[in-house]
Image (cartoon, rainbow, N blue to C red; front, side):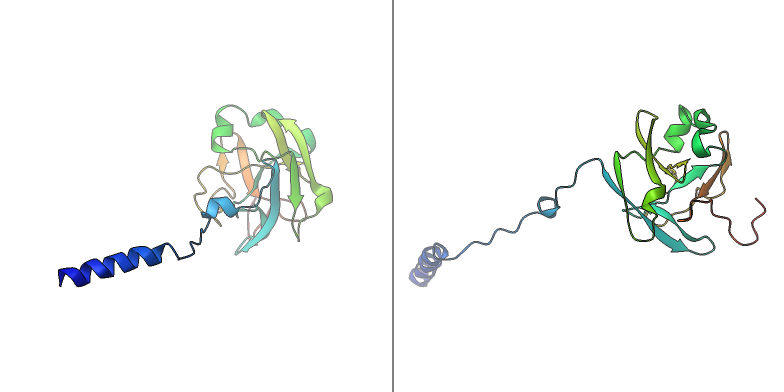
Length: 162
């Protein structure tokens, strides 16, 4: 019995040298090289908001009332930026359904801040997963925040009092 086990082990060892090894790269290794400054702005749809802007990962994008076209830009600074991080990208890309002519970049908040139809665009730190819209109609120290439609106007769900 010992001799059979020894021969079986030797045969397996010898045959292992004949096998072809296939190396499968880790998922991170197959990710296409994309410049760090590239970011896609696309859309999502969710009742009662309808269609609104999100980034390529599905994170909702927000605007602060009264900050369009350079007005009130200093309203969100310091602690505000920790709660409402700006969407930074030097060369944002408009996906289908997003008007590329409305997608621009301003230099503010320490880098290239994406704007859409003149609105500086922000994330909401309390949105935890793709599709969260917990920042819609939030009123805080800095003002009132809204999702932004592809037409470039703040979302106004049916029956909204604001």
